[in-house]
Image (cartoon, rainbow, N blue to C red; front, top):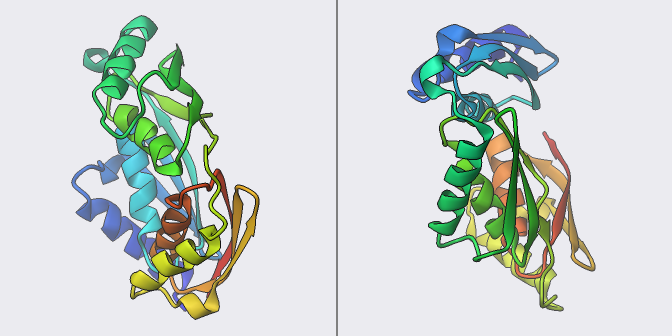
Length: 216
């Protein structure tokens, strides 16, 4: 087990290593394995990158993000401009079904709504607008309404986890209740936890994944 002091240094090193993050603008605090990131950044994309850089560090149990996005003058855009850019980005993204996602913007904060059939489509819609200029944050309220709920969804998820050799699938339990999947059991790192969540979310018929895994 890493001490908080060692964990803080590892997180700071990871932020410095990631070229998408201006680590000099970010403060790092650690308590009992939980990371708090504080500071001011010039784009939402950089805030997202900082959060995921911290999550990549082995030993991190969770991340609290207290980073404000202050757009420089060259990056400021009207809400109408952000809406148009977001709509174009969604339209040109082959992973997002046409005419399924609606965009609302207030003070640069983007809210996505609508319905898609697969979890990866919901994630793709958010990814499509994350790096747009003028975006200060994203609320993803897209609902997953699968047209088909296969009876073997549990088997398919477990098979997907098994294909990822770094995940000890025998330690995880997959519980399917309608279109909701719950994952329980220990994993060795946040990256392993994230991989399990992604595998479950990608299964056809899954609308929601409940994470009850713990980092052992």
